[in-house]
Image (cartoon, rainbow, N blue to C red; front, side, top):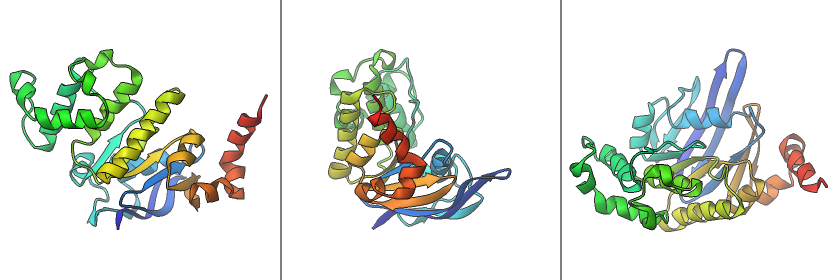
Length: 253
């Protein structure tokens, strides 16, 4: 079953076609990496899926529901979660309170910042915090968190709407090697244990080829290759347009 279906999606800015007739699917429980050089259209495509940008043409469906052009809060209601390259959390609140605020929104309850918030949805919030490995940091103020823990908190917040699809923008950006591995292990566990589908952008090719079930390559708004990590790695067009730069860097003295 396909959780996400994108059909002939297009978005132009003036004479520049940032996304040009893109079509692809993401199956239930699948991890799909979206890669390509800077300016390839990855961010525009993500923003068109989750409602931050209204596409000029095409169609987006999630679990059979047409979400094309819906605003982000309505896309979120259809079970699409998202994390960003730059995290968006309440720095002065605790880890627990951040998740409780998101849960209050999901359950359509007014959000207070006192005793009512501390009591509301506590068990549900603590379960999500445990799921991302932050139980020891439940009471910590977010501004005191290490960067890797901050990224984990963002995942917990993204899970509050019980998503069938999680969009992750550069999930390991800014992390050292151990941190990248830990973050992608978390992603893998969400897929295997929860059944969420993941569409992610990533510039670290070790992460892409080590964790994606399928890779989609964009260049100038068009898909130029799609397939298994091994097939994409050996694709001559992809190597010429994108991967060659990484191979050269890896081989540099």
